[in-house]
View 1: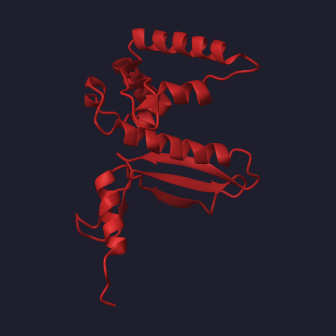
View 2: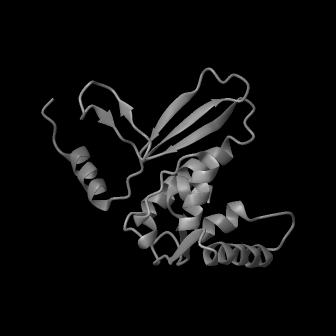
View 3: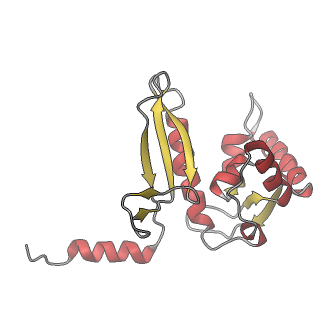
Length: 185
């Protein structure tokens, strides 16, 4: 539920690979246990599920987000909940973007898990991620998220990484054209 809160959408492939594996269980056993637990959470109203349409980089699977009871649970556990109920009414068009942010951030967390010095201290989702660099209302940078990396022992020297993931083909084409355009300098 914490992943659904922070990243809005989480797919079953990710959950089966990184959340549910345990001991020396077979892949079939992991899938069965994961499906059973996710179904129970969905039936109880803690999570909502949607069928993901096939894409070029992932096969069709299920996408999860917080249900009403899950939202209430997160509020009770943390004293706040950044989740918007509209996100559970239907699978939003930007869900693949949210899944990319999940994989980038949690991949970095896994890579630093055994690092002797550094660790991911916190991920701050887009709804709370901003940097006010001036006095005006428009003097704000709003990235897709912030990743705070710090020392395992020395907590005084944290660094903050702005996370911005672009999935748009149109933007890619625009950047490619700019790169190949003649320059006047």
